[in-house]
Image 1 (tube, rainbow, N blue to C red):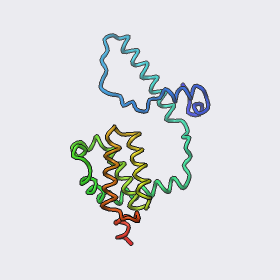
Image 2 (cartoon, rainbow, N blue to C red):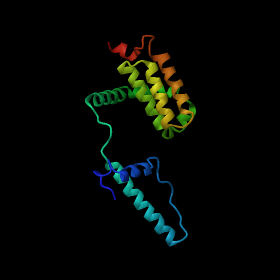
Image 3 (cartoon, rainbow, N blue to C red):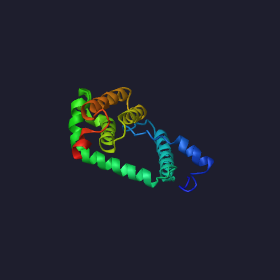
Image 4 (tube, helix red, strand yellow):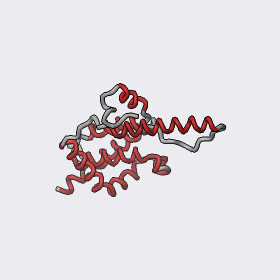
Length: 174
């Protein structure tokens, strides 16, 4: 087994990272026919668990500087402070299918909240925010999500952000 300090620079560590499946969510209980199969699955589970522990204990490659931490904090505050208002807006602009299964759309809804908060509080140009939100959806969501997120955010911009890029919410505060 690799220790957290030895994983970073070794060939074994690289292999460990390459074997790590960050998308495995377990699944339902497995049924086996023989004790041998059960032992084999238990052994594989032990190897996978050790591999996961090594990967999770490895030092992060990204060093968080003060700018990244400050930006993250500002976005989280903006999301939290605009949450109730954005929930009402999102409820009006998302498709009915997303309303029918909101738990299945948590990631998509989070992307919408973050994008709306960034446009409303940070004043980031809406084209940049929409592009980043669509890129996130392409990477982490199902096939139709990027198109829906694009449409929802364009509707938000049309209805809630003026031509200069200032949110009506930010203008009302000043």
